[in-house]
Amino acid sequence: MTPEAQAFIVFSAGMLLLMGIGLNMAFALVLTGAGMAWTLDFWDTQLLAQNLVAGVDSFPLLAVPFFILAGELMNSGGISRRIIDMAQAWVGHIRGGLGFVAIGAAVLMASMSGSALADTAALATILLPMMKRQGYPMHTSAGLIASGGIIAPIIPPSMPFVIYGVTTNTSISALFLSGIVPGIIMGIGLIVAWKLQLREMDLPQGVKLPLIERLHATRKAFWAMLMPLIIIGGMKTGIFTPTEAAVVAAFYALVVALVIHREMKLIEIHEVLVRAAKTTAVVMFLCAGAQVASYMITLADLPTVLTGWLGPLVESPRVLMAVMMVTLVLIGTALDLTPTILIFAPVMLPIAVKAGIDPVYFGLMFVLNGAIGLITPPVGTVLNVVAGVGRLSMHQVIKGVNPFLVTYLIILTAFVLFPEIVTAPVAWMR
Image 1 (cartoon, rainbow, N blue to C red):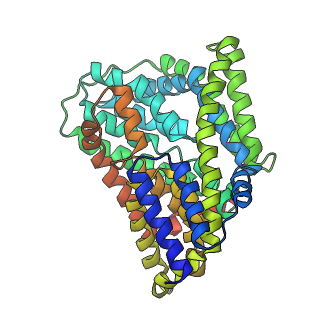
Image 2: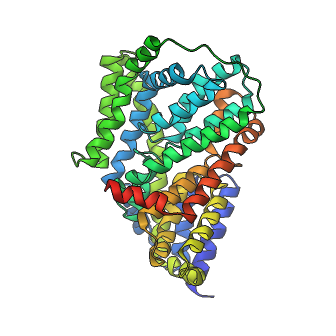
């Protein structure tokens, strides 16, 4: 058996074993990378340490902590709540209106924070109690909110796009543009799925607010609505880079929370910074650990081995994409989005490019697939967030999310069959 084959066995078996015993993913990546180094007779503790540092020594990755901070400031400063209040003012009176509020708010909040967990937590905290009081089925409501939360990694600004772009050396600005239309399509898909679910529910119709109250709610959300326009507009016009956009987003959210809305006090900033720092530490440690494994994967030439296996499919790009997407769906049931990007994106992208697949389109599909993994059991971190906030069992949330999961898989299939849905808008916007 060749050293490369042995390294592949060490990597795959090691990851399965370490995940099976519940070891932290970052530690699992470091240990499997070290095991591969030993197998390849390339053991060097200094090299391992250098790769750990190199994994986080990246200017574009600075966007991650600032987007995380922006999301925390949005939730603490009342920005998220004002978005939900505005959506409720306009569509809350419709039968099943709170479901449409959840979808609309999810799309709007996705254009501000880029964090599925932060958006889901905000939506679930505010909307689930309201849905319960109005007699909405809790399992379906929780499933809808979880499904709406995963639009955040797709619509810019998106932290997963930043991580993917850094990991694969793909244009982050182009990835951001690629997510706009698919994110809107995801929202439309949820609306259709929710309407179908309403047939089985006996829900009352709310009272329609006067136009003056709707406009008042919209005025209160004005500063929140301005945030995505500043971020996307600034990047589109070249005023600032995606990394600088993250800093602008965090600063803007801070000013709005402290000066305009005045819903956050100076003393609360410390707590917000601590929460953001904890989340950032988790993400960055994953990036560091993944760099160790990625370096050894490259050294073992595993992408070439995988290319040899998938070689016959290179002549059929759509078939290759379908096979890769099915593989990623299966991976998504066991791995979170960030480690999926860090481990598999550098391996799969060269194969896709060799088949003539646009790298930006592949990046969108990769992140979309990983986002869907956030609501697929047994790992499904977004499911855990909704279950925890709503005090529901995981079984209830999984049951409620299934119809919306099917909707997303249909959308994913449509993007595989008709890649122009993604590539044409990007070409037009660029």
